Structures are given as C-alpha cells and as structure tokens.
Image 1 (cartoon, helix red, strand yellow):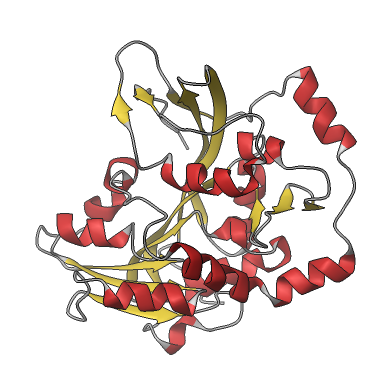
Image 2 (cartoon, rainbow, N blue to C red; image 1 turned 90 degrees about the horizontal axis):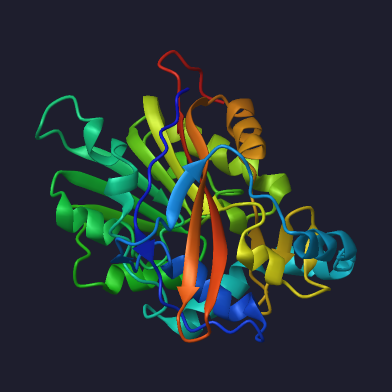
Length: 316
C-alpha cells in the first residue's frame, strides 16, 4: 500500500471554551468539523500521516492518571440503553445538529470511480446514516445512485423518511442494529458496491465491532469497498473527557450516555482483516480546529481508511 499524503488549507471557526466540559459541546464540533470549512492560504491545517500524534508531557500525564473505569453495572446499563440514548439524542436535536457532508466524494473517489461504465447505477450502503447528512448530498450530486441507509435509532430513520429529498426510487431507509440485525434481511447478499462507515463504528462497543464489519461484508460485492472515517487516538475530544468517563482502553462515555471509541490504524487493520477484508488505505488525518476568539488551536485526529472485499471471497 502506498498511501498518499496531501495538504488542504483549512480553518475551522468554533466557539468551544477550554473551560467547559467538552463531552456535549465536542459532539457538535466532532461531527461538524469535517463538513464546515473555509479555505485559507496561509498555513496547512490538514495533513495525512501513518503515525499517531505524539502527546505532550501534560497530555500523557493526564491519560496515565485517568485509570478509573466506569463501574461494570453502569457499563452494562449503557450497553442495554445504547439505542434509547441515541434516540433521545435525535429527539433533542432533530435534524438541526449535524451539517451536510459535502466532502465525501473528495476524500473517497470510490463513490464514483468504481463504475464500470459512466451511467452505471451504483448501490451504496450508508451504515449509521443519522438523518441523512451524508447520503442526501451524494444523491443530489450523483443521480446514478441507489442508497440503502440504516441507523440504530428509529427516530433518525423517521427523520430521513420525512426529508423532502427522500424517494424510494433512490433510497431505502431502515432501522438496523449492525451488531444484532442481519443486513441480508433487507439487502440482497453481495449486491452493494460501496459501504460507508463514517463516525459510526466508534459508537459501538469494541467487543461487537467485528460483528458489524462482518455484517457489512455479507452484502458487499466481491471487490466492493468499505469507506471509513472516525475518531483517532489522541484526538482533542479524547483528552478532554473528565475523570470517571472511561469505559476501557480508548473508550469513553459522554454526559448524554452516548459512547465514543478512539481508533488506531493498527487496531482498525486487525479488525477488518480478521473479518476478511483487504487493506487499501489506512491513515491518520491531522486537523486543527481554530478558535480565533479564544486564541486556541486544538488538534483533531481522525482515522480514514478504505478496505476491500476480495474478488475471490467466501461470505461469513
């Protein structure tokens, strides 16, 4: 694999304060900082690397000292109530929380380039679609798509179906727990060209992540891609969790009960290859979120990856 490295000149304007608990506010920033961007020609604010960010001495000490885990009783309760907590999240925020993601075709050329001929209608699965901030812009940009869109939250799926742009000619939205419900109950086996997992897998318990990626594997065509982007190890949000939020290694709970895992590319590689995928690209995205008012510049770290189902593959 020969991952490319390039620089985009991006600056993000946020209102986050270093004095606040970032657990709730940062959920907004995390989800939106990939979407809202203005060009800046003065300095590079995004780059892609193969190595995790090195912590400062202060940051390393904070993580070292934060060894207390949430009780097993509470962890089991969070797992049982995971769907309810995300449903409450969408009840509170409706469709106004996340911004539309217009960057996906820039970052993932497979959303277009995997066509065998120009007008081929590609079938895409968006696993963890939320209220459609990713796939509705895709459908607007490319009329030769059919999208299966599923989400853990029934309320999110209802918001998708109520969107004026929703049409069963181009999309089918359905509720699905990737760790329990078989995608093949809704989607024909080996019929999907491209699947996206964008800020989704981090919300699943690490013990169940491979169930989810194997579930997707079954509906992918041989040679089909999974396009992945999620939180990376040592991201600013990880470092801002207060003591008592830690569920396990790189795994935390927010105040609203939703959870977040912070990935290394090594962990991700193992997760996908053990499920049968081939690695195509697997790297860290380094960005800076700038708050001019506060005079702050904080590091954002994501993992961006592409995995492919082998041409000669056996379904699990």
